[in-house]
Length: 155
Image 1: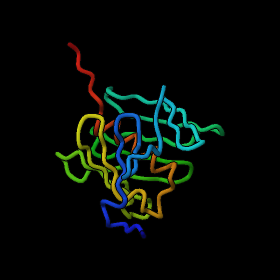
Image 2: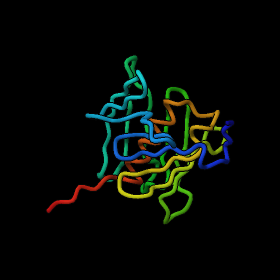
Image 3: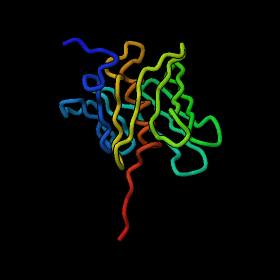
Image 4: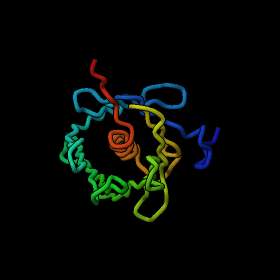
């Protein structure tokens, strides 16, 4: 079956806590102890979450891979860079947590929609030809940390 960029069911991934699952529930990537694992590739994650600024950096075995950083006072727009590729991670509206990953040429590669604490649905990313897999996984994980944080309840 051929995947279409507009077919939301075909291209759906889900970040469920520390795991990225495909449509069939197969784990594509996971995070343990601030290490993002995608197949045989491991990226060390460093981030500031919960302070007045959001910043996340991923470092691969051969040096820095990418960064995501808040570009203004709010979290409405994040700027990201993966190696030499630049992205904008922008919310679709001021009161919505739905977000798009926009490529440098202005095309929308991925649409993200939180569906609960620690759960972020990722649409179109798997079908997007303009977004490398490592970039897609790293960028969507960063958005999950901002838009769908897992809450720990204290009793």
